[in-house]
Amino acid sequence: TGEQVVGDIDFGPEARIDYDDVVLGFFDEYLRGQHTDLRDEPAIRYFVMGSNAWREAASWPPEEARPAAWCLAPGRLLPCTESPATATSQFVADPANPVTDPYDSFGPHDYRGLASRADVLTFDSDVLVDDLTVAGNAVASVYVSCDCRDFDLWFRLLDVYPDGRAINLRSPGAEVLRASYRDISGGQQLLVPGEVVELSLDYLMLANTFKAGHRIRVQVSASFAPHLSRNLQTGESEHVSKESRAAKITLHHGDEHQTTLTLPVLDSGSPKTKL
Image 1 (cartoon, rainbow, N blue to C red):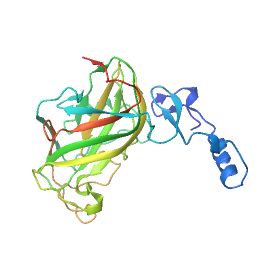
Image 2: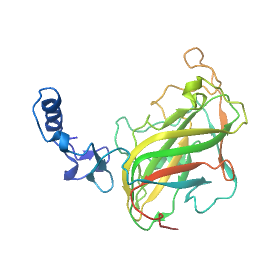
Image 3: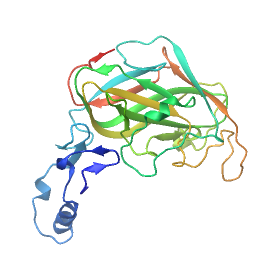
Image 4: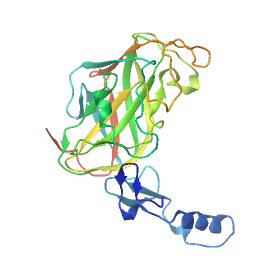
């Protein structure tokens, strides 16, 4: 919080805050009984990447955020007002050859190289004509089937710059769901091979301005080592077995099985894009 350069991105001098002052002010108010201005301040203060500015809100997500649905079609991310044709996207995931994070530190990094892997699905929006600011909890509703009993769904959000850089908007490990625990209240529920299920990730917290000339990117994979224990894709726990198997994973698009990304948009109106 005292730095302006994090990972590969310089967020500018306004990003820096005196974190010690924030903590000590909290202690003075709530532990030492000294009246400060803390209780009069807005409940939420958050940093918007891209705009590189702090904003305030009375609650989280910000009350003014409005959901905007984007539909995933093969290779493309489209506003859901443009109904994509029914289709599927497939990849083969092999636990013995996982997708690997090339960076050993957290923060924003350039992940453009992942798009070249056959076991990573990439979905790009058209180029944005206007800035698009989002703040809140994005929601991914992914309809998927597999010829396996279990797999991990990684759903990465990235900001693609005009020069090709693809910058992650969340820390690795905060954007993954193990399919067999899609309903945690029901315990482990292994997949039925070939059966379509909905995997919902409703906690993709972010605040970012996608600048005009940028693209929104979604990447889907079944691994991102070393950020989660290995899924053998057999239904067996990695704690009791070492035997793994490759699996064909299918994302579904269109009709009643439309995979979507819902973004909490602060700007009014529909996103404007160009090819």
